[in-house]
Image 1 (cartoon, one colour):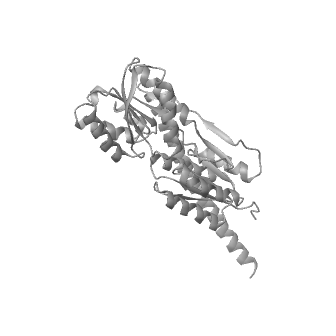
Image 2: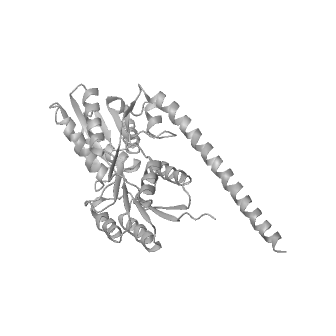
Image 3: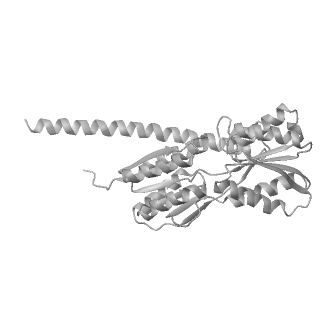
Length: 325
């Protein structure tokens, strides 16, 4: 009999997009390597009240641990604190709240990413030019920090100017609309700083419609592999560069298990970034293709093991049945 304790983990994601899907897949795949762990994932679709409902649902279900990516910091702070004060361990992933009432945080340093983008654009423009910024959802901590880090970097270049900024809420549609009106307002734009790789192609599309896409460079963040994602956009010369924003769902689940199994764990885990541009995009594509093939093999293997285990279980039931007659 399997006598390992059964742990239930609830994941409250803020959004439903390719970056989140990759992280969710990694969390679920990593959970296969632990006995008696069940994971349930809910997405709030960028809605604070829906995310509050999801967290309350998990609390009512009596989960042993919560993994939360807070849609916006201010509205989600009391909800996270409530769970934490109930004694449920809470791991914040990628987005923070406005208090320290959580068990652990794991994510990239968004301020550092913003700074890297600022330095990259300033050096690409040789220290002189007009930049527009299209941000993620403005109440979320990555959007705030990606802006602050960026400003810190470009403030060192007197001839680099941020001439406009708009909230594109992490999505392609709003980015296209915002960029379109920026193009009407500003005859000279040299660079577009997009807070992720869904905003970036929306901005590019708007510039292309205006026949101005060649006048400016486009820089994004995420660098996901796969169709229409950042890595491909660099290879297709839509983006000049994008910065890696790691999903690391496997590390998130390992951290959860360390907390649940009462092992030592760090309160803050910071993941690294790196630039992806035309000099290294091909190398990265070779690696990510290889990794995705390995992922498929792991899933196939897990399916086979699952099938095998249920056969064994059925056999045991039948044998048990035999002995009694």
